[in-house]
Length: 119
Image 1 (tube, rainbow, N blue to C red):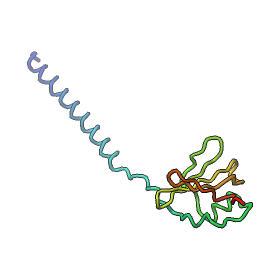
Image 2: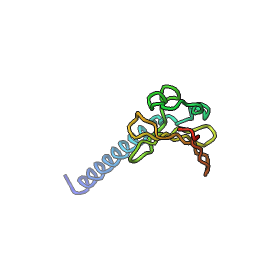
Image 3: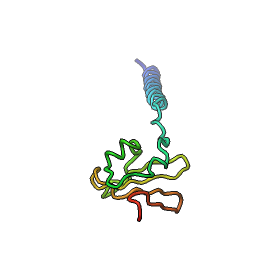
Image 4: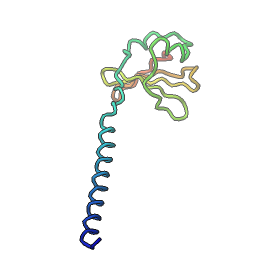
């Protein structure tokens, strides 16, 4: 085999490997692009669901009444977040997923304590 043929074979192998590499990259990027997006966390509960809660209500009872919270944003104690349609949200504080320390509605800078009710 002469040097010109060897160089041509080397060039063809390089082109083939580059083509294969591009095909793999394209395949991976296409499969990533078609992954379904996680469902949006749309508000499922209304502020009215948190009014008139009885004293001594436990966290499991609250979940049965208003549904599961969207997320736990707490550190130290659980702070469960319920987003509302108007962009505000309700926070439920519990140290042990049993006792409720407080339920607060936050709307902008305004904070309204919903539970326990102030006398």
